[in-house]
Amino acid sequence: MEKKQQLYSGKAKSVYLTDDADKLILVYRNDTSAFDGEKLEQLDRKGKVNNKFNGFIMQYLEHHGVKTHFEQCLSDQMSLVKKLEMIPVECVVRNIAAGSLCRRLGVQEGIELVPPTFEFFLKNDALHDPMINEYHILSFGWASKSEIDAMKDMTFRVNDILQKRFLDIDLLLVDFKLEFGRYHGELLLGDEFTPDGCRLWDVQTRKKMDKDRFRQGLGGVIEAYEEVAYRLGVDID
Ligand code: ADP
Image 1: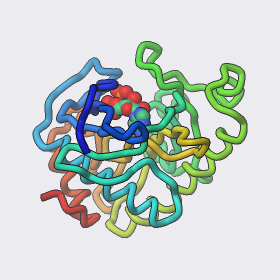
Image 2: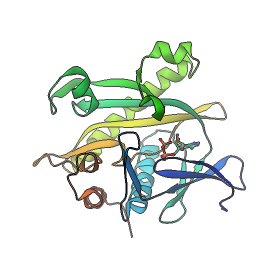
Image 3: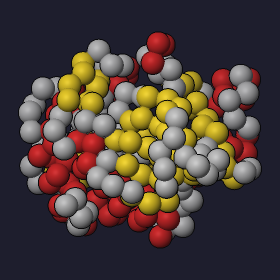
Image 4: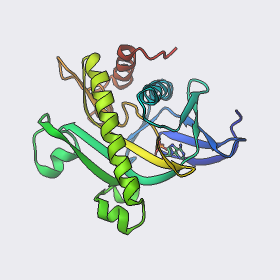
């Protein structure tokens, strides 16, 4: 599959058209950003680890009945996906309090959330991805009621599947973000699932194994991503 014209370049990936109007190529770059792009660094091997990591997770989810845009990894940093009409909303499930939830509600990091909580955010860097509710999504026409319900169902389903999978390798799935899009009338999981968009803590040591290492300047960012990939059995080389 040939890479054609660039459609979009985001903070971590570049998106290219292909000779198939229904398919895109995503190029995972080494760019690592936080705080809406204010902190930006190039981290060696990140594009490759995230591309392979995402391919593994998307295939695992497909295997467990979640429909995704993923087709195949084309090279170290490139994947072929179905071209979606993206819904400009981020779906977040949290199993343990961390990050913006703690800042917003003044709760302590590490509190277990039973049942897990769910949040919608508007995908808009200039506005710092504000939290929104279902009424905003409906009133502004970002998605229909049935799409909202499907996004919530699928996000909780992904939580059930991946919480178990990560626990098997001694990792707590603290929280994660998903994006969805439309493909010929069908709602599919899009974008990526990588340590850039989730929190993973080691069960025993509580060591952070995700992008919080970058946000908080803890070092060993890619080494942590590689450790998670190794435990999962992702073939990086
Ligand atoms: P951001 O836009 O948040 O900076 P990225 O750098 O990861 O994020 O850019 C990837 C962009 O591609 C995102 O805007 C994402 O919504 C979009 N995208 C992901 N998967 C698809 C897809 N299958 N079809 C169309 N757009 C997609």
